[in-house]
Image (tube, rainbow, N blue to C red; front, side, top):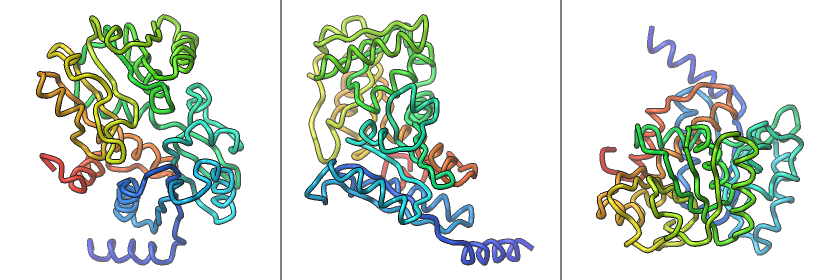
Length: 300
């Protein structure tokens, strides 16, 4: 009976049209998002192709974004994910936004709904998914958020929803950090958020650090802050997942910090995006195990 069911699903999958998805961003050739979505789709009997659309391969760079969005419409993409540096730039090119994306001011998932491109943001739930599993009961009394871009904005909202007493935002663009702090105050009454120019000052008395910049990626190696600012009373959450064990995480563990790697957020984002793209319920544990196998992570 089981064989008959499997054969039936396989036949249905072959007969069904292949869904097209994609990821738009810069320097994404080593992204594991295609593998995550295609493998999960296989378990559901779906035919799915996930295409990388790397702006670094275009002489126009990010200026090619409007053309790429229009091409996705024309080619019949069911949807696409958006990453650095397009999470905010893509908004004017869309037909509608979810309440979440509108509140945050950033989009990382676009779904075609009857020919209309609707922007969503799964960064909030994605980061919270990984954080709560890796660092249950983490002290949220004073959290420093390093980075106020698209991912940082989503995490600031996630921290407020999780009950962070105070969020201190640090970004090279001081105006952007101040604007995000004001946005958090307006969207989450009672939540305290401020912008500080110096990371050393921000970390005084901090209980946790969330790193939300590209520093540490395979393409941009390095540390986002001086190692001596880390101490054992500080937990550290990383959003970079390639490599899974960044220089920041290595330094944090060496200094006695509890850590959360970027794999949790990558899987959390993919879970919600898969649900939006397909209407199906993905298996979170299976997707997490698959990611860590691909990364060769400890415990995979």
